[in-house]
Length: 498
Image (cartoon, rainbow, N blue to C red):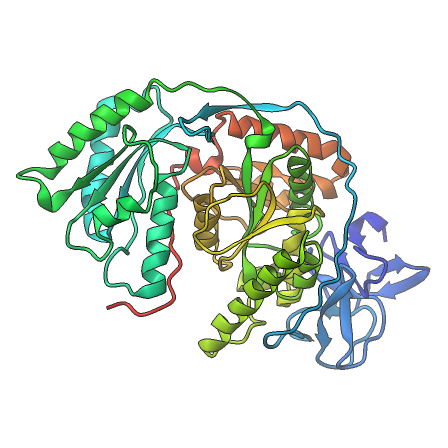
């Protein structure tokens, strides 16, 4: 069989990944041996290349992805039915720093962005309505609709309201999560102007919430508390929005260095190609951006389980290592406190696409952050203060994690997917297909096909095209989720609702 129909990712691996569907009886020539397939095996799935007794680790990406549930033979299709995770509870870790010198040329690249009064830069110039509580979602939606109808969005990029169900009947951590994420949205530089819309009696008291913004631009961020309005709150809101529109519509793009760009790294609907094509491509981009002085952020903490030591040992300092250990073990404790195992994560779609265990998923997932050292570690709701590669605490859920990445200050979310998904969060959410079939079938969702890497294109050839695409998006080119008007937010919730 032709070598290009499968790949052995690491010399130490005990499996190969099929790049095309293979049938029982077909053979693979690998490491001087001929392996005959014992079952039909779908594209993206794993075939064992050596006999493996029950309880023995199976190796992919050079690391264990679980152990064999029963005696397995070379040529067997390895999947969730015969492979079991090695993950259990929290662990103790030892800091063994690994420093890899990345020889990446510094380029004088720029994008066209909006320079804000505080020196921050946005890649969009939009008007946002941010409710302090879900009770005023309807008012916010009505205001956004009326302003769009009045203005046609001429001279600005878009008008949106970021509706949510929270802001009241929440306690302690959940209440703070809501306040932090809403604060982060209000302060995001992709917004040229913001109307904060309150009710008046909510737990997230509007005046107190405004204090969390710190030193903000009072000309471009306004507050309206609807219970305090005599008569029609919509007309009062429109009066404020018309003023905000006049201010924001004067903004123009200007050339700024690529070092100002901040991107979030996310995957969803992953498949067996994710760790071979799209995630490594995004990892190469992340390393390139960091080398230019820019910033990338990796989240989805549960999808680090099984690959966490790789990230821990890339931390620049012992302090960052300890923060990463806490981030990992705190998330494991969160699972365990709800009586849930820490090793159950791959979705039905993941499994159908060739991902069998959480380790299998994590070792592919973490490739999105390349090989650069870790410069910062953030809690959920924190805002970026450090350039370079950062780790952010948030769950793996696509919309919650993408919202968290945008909230910390990322201008764009780079979202790799093998199964496909249409959604977007409140910043441009660029979809990168892991395989050619998805890129072909769902071109209305997909912005870039990393599947070209299994069609003969090299990483060296594809990376410059990808860099250009991201720069174009930062300079105003719309991504599919913007064209389709699929945009929303989701806030992490853990505790009691009153």
